[in-house]
Image 1 (cartoon, rainbow, N blue to C red):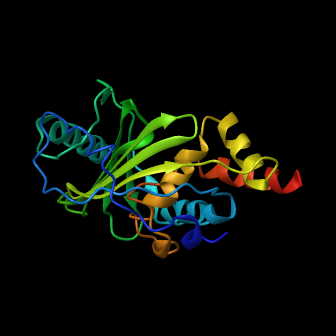
Image 2 (cartoon, helix red, strand yellow):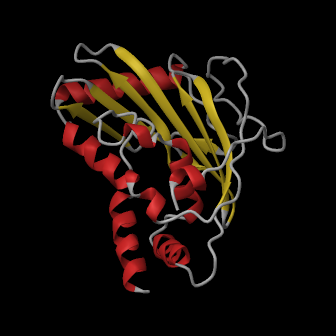
Amino acid sequence: MRLAALVTALTAVTALGPPAAHPAAAQEPRTPAHSAARAAVLPGTVRWLPASDGSFRERYREDGSPAARRLAARTLRAVGSGAIATHLPQGAHIPEVPPMTVWRARDDGSRVARVAYTGTAVPPSGIAVHYDAAGRLTRTVEHVFEERGETQGRVAVWRDGRRVLDAFVEHTPEPSSRSERFTDCTAERDVPGWVVHALTTSGDPEAVGTGDAGAPGGFRVPFANTLLLCSRQADRSR
């Protein structure tokens, strides 16, 4: 099944509404929320996720330098003060010692600092803050994933503080299908099928292979290896 067939036309959603903003978040213009139709996704349609992750890692390397640590501290201060807007839903938060990674581009020295969210915002929720080689902020990409049930969830995406996606997803594979085998495998590794579905909805398959940190959504896919493993396992179980 192709991605275009999987993620059907999005329609306006009224039941969910926009997520609650972080108390210090800047006000944003209201944009239409969206809902993604139910679909039995996986696994063929998510091949671009590991490919995009590989492209990201080819361009970026994890940076633990003093400059990167200073950038991380600066990012946290900006997020905490509201200088960088965040949109944490009710019950979500940034830990006092947040999971945070800084990557540096091999080609131009630009960096990406990513702060992870916890609580009701499930992995891989967080905000990726992009800087050029001189340390100037160039863009932000924020993802919030919220569980709505065992097979359902919601994903919202903001780029530079502007909401560009608000979607409801449901992943219900047919019994005894390759998709069900794939989903069972990922669920055993704490990656629900709806989360993978949500990431395919929120990413940009056209950016695969470009090395753009915005593919998908400004940060590497944290469970790319799980997707590859489970895809192979689903094939072997035929």
